Amino acid sequence: MSGKKEKKPRVESRAEKAKSREVKPQRPPMRGWLGRGRGTSTYVQQADEWRGTTVQVCGMWPFAIGTGTPMVGVPLGRHIHTGATLCCDPISWFQRAKLISNPSAFILGKPGLGKSTLVRRMATGLAGYGVMPLVLGDLKPDYVDLIEAMGGQIITLGRGRGYLNVLDPGEATQAAERLRAAGHEKEASQVIADAHGRRHTMVSALLTILRSAPPTDREETIIDRALKWLDEHHEGIPVLGDLLRVIQLGPAEVRAVALDRGDDTRYKAITEGLEASLIGLVGGGRLGETFSRQTTNPMRRDAPVVYDVSAIDDSEMDLQAAALLACWSAGFGTVNVANALADAGLEPRRHYFVILDELWRALRAGRGMVDRVDALTRLNRQRGVGMAMISHTMSDLQALASEEDRMKARGFVERSGMVICGGLPSAEMPLLTAAVPFSQAEQSLLIGWQDPPAWDPSTGREAEPPGRGQFLVKVGGRPGIPVKVELTTVEASINDTNKLWHDQSRVGRRARRLIEEAEL
Image (spheres, rainbow, N blue to C red):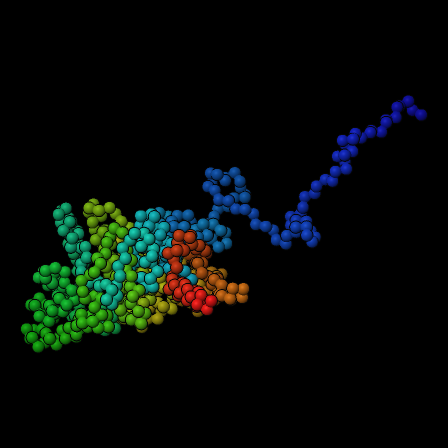
């Protein structure tokens, strides 16, 4: 035996023994404890997402990523894939973000998927930025409740409901007087010349719709000279009946451009067709008397405005197209007056958001109508207005008589700063991609959104269409931004386009309740 002392075994204390008997907790695996009833998950739960500025989250890399969607403009909704907020409207993207070179948007999509709701969201947000919404022709109506809620002006047109005098210069005469008083003679002359051209164009447009063909060059010149004669000799605001009487009387200035060679019989033969068409406009023909009487509700330039033409039946296609063109003419005339006064420093600068809904109706009204609309779409940037043009499909623009008109109509889409598409059928893709490049994945997305709604057996009703409120925002060749537009409770109350059906349902429920009470 060695001299070393043997170590005595260490005796554990009571506390250490109790601690050793405790079961050490184990961390569950990534998908939870395996086994029935133990909380397993077959999918990895999505992590919570938070948004912050680069100053706030700069130290959290690599767990912070950019949203990838612009945040300048009206909040439209959330990105379908990332959930990021998308802010988008043609005026903000042109004026502030510099993302587009033209403050206009073309909206395409099948009926019932929310095109008008999308534009109403833009109009509501832009009104908050100080931009005046101008709805120049509401056929359903989709915008009357919105403009009324904003405290704007509602102008009703239709047979026996309201009139719009196409020869009314509007506020141009008073604006010219203010400009002359302030020493702006040149600007005053430009305002008067613009009003004259607008009235001339509108008379020619009405004749085009009535005849389904534009007036001849000689007739255009006769109308121009007759309008100038009215401005010089007529007291007050003339109407179409006054224009007809001038052409029938044949003043020397009008006879000179008609080239009657001093022969009264020749003059009557030259102006017979024009006289007959004007009688049709004045006497309540296919277009009624809507444009031949004094304007019942002049348009304001300092408030949101909607022209309510929903009283015109869909079967009266010509009257609808004429009403839309008259509203567009009056609206852009008011914008020109506002710009002239602002340029002279007599009024504050105002910007407008012009909404041209159901564009296809005006384009199909007759030959020459595409040229009228084409002139409007080319000058919106110079006039200081943003524009939203709404149609259903590219086929609407292609269903025109001549190839020349079809090419011009396709140019509306090509020149737009942004193109926003809802659900579209697959047959539309070749026409759409010819104007704006879309990838195959983007095309598949649009085709999927146009599928019909599924039947819900639990409620006995159709579910919401898969593409309702979903849109793809395209700017040139950039990848599209898919967005889901969701309404707030306030917006939902003024975005209901099925009020008549709800009223019918309430009447039906009340009738059933009365029947049940009678049986008891």
